[in-house]
Image (cartoon, rainbow, N blue to C red):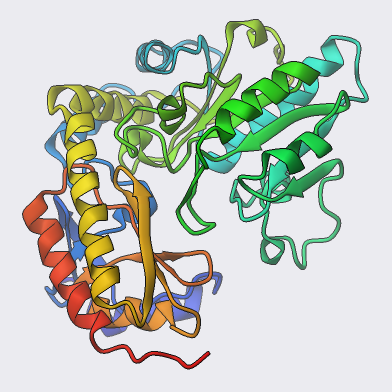
Length: 406
């Protein structure tokens, strides 16, 4: 006999740490772009587990891959190769144009690995003091101590003691500010092609190419955080491809295995021996179960022509969001996005959390970003009809908002 919603909420209140602010509902299953709670209510998922559920929920390709793999081999220590891990590494190398891969379990871990690799690289070259890392304000790179130090929002630092030293921040999109900060003591620059948590902010034209040139000039490594923007989210496998820039290191996670935990740091061949045996590792990283799920996602990206689909539906979605922003110009500032990572900025004084709640009551799930941006990162398989259903609900909710006097 299944537990009631009240029973489950009671257990959650009693036993879960209160580090999340969750509404009083419990999800039990999903199908495609839809989620269902214990009461049987259906929700259109327009945030995809924060860009994780690339193929939606209960996709048959992932279900089949993990089921078959679980019956063969779930885990083996990285003292040995496993077939799924090796195949996945080759696929990531082919798709990114970078040759070497380290597997872990999350985006934060991928960024930790990138940070360690960058510093160790300079150490191995006889420049052990070259440890400085430059990041940007408004960025989000994870919640472990190294990753949070690179994250450009002070709220994520507070209460955890001294941050990792030798990490500094400049304004996102300001190439001149970066040029003033980056020098021959800089180990690496870390950047998001689109700031997700920062408010769905795409990099300005020429900014990423300028960072590449700047890093080349001083010998710093360019780390591109594609945790939210990678695996087809932008309409390309990597969002950095839109700028025609090749990074030294890329971090991946979120959508890579469609909901099964996995992370990856992918880097150039020149770093193949930078982290020798014993210098870094991950117990679960790249185990055959997670790798099988990731391979299923990558194969579906190709077989279903999802990159073309993301480009077309993403352009449609941003256009429709822009039309809503114009229709409700007294409460909205505008829309922006790349592919199926989109944002609708509300005007100062509007409460995005209230919009989230009202939309949830109407059966539509979204997230927020920055101070007052509604964030959309639906499954890559979403249809225009499903987007239209979500847009209609959003239109109705925006119509209830009242302008706030300056």
